[in-house]
Length: 406
Image: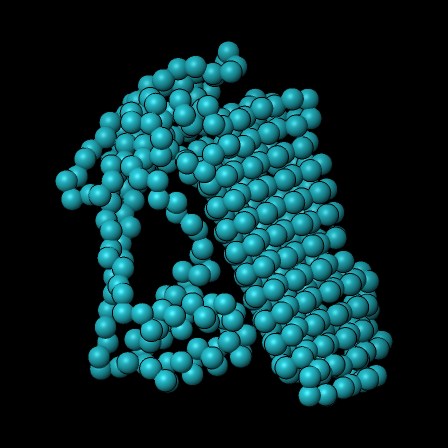
């Protein structure tokens, strides 16, 4: 027990996990309770329904449900499809399964597996509100000839994936668990009542009003540059690729946020409990922050601020013009990887951690190694271009700055 405790404390000190995550692991270590695996299976077919806001929208579907005596809750499924959409949906049965292994011959390996499993659950935070039995509904929203430049999506409970395509229409495919309604028709009516899909001259709006249904949506949008995109979920994940927009804002309260190949003049990404990952693309002005989670930033930047209260920051920045980066953490460490050819004017600060650097042609302007604070001010690669002004600070973590091809 003492050895496992030391491993957890060492992981906190190295910045591999946050202090809060370490506390959770220590509590789990002293707990003898085991979660009982629950298995549930749902089998679906289609059910028909008609009705749409636009005259060119008609929906048909079939639905049936299969009950299993050993299952705790009953799931009923249905599909609501637009005849204007050439789309086939293959429903795969979902099985939630947990397995536990005890390795008596190698306790260290067993404890490592426990650590990895616990950290993965923390990283993939997704509160699955237990409202009891549910009905499962499938629905597609579609708008022909998309020319709106502002998109606003807000989900109270659920996840969204953004996918550009080469069509001129916008389509939102929804897989929904509705916790109200005893029948499939009741569930569908509840879903449509609590969901808004509106389009006017410049705006497209899609949002849900209640947490009593979980909406997992995939949004297909025309491949073009938008004026403004706003994404929000209280409980769930936000994921996007090839997002081209002048102003982008995304927030997940409980869940992760991942954007691949963004092209944004203004970029804001925020989570309360969940990691943030931005890879590829270009950020002109970026603001990235999380309360409990890690930040991964591997993009071209010009002016970016990233802050994690309980979590590490890992950045691999591309610089093609003079740029500024302000990175701050409270309990986590900061890892910075920079292009070899640029000039860096940097300032590193940490209270109880350490810092290390391996940049070329470094000139130390000022260095302090007090008991309660360590700081370093430097310039590297004086003849290099473009220039990066780097400010990295953390309270209890460490700071590492190195060239890309070290």
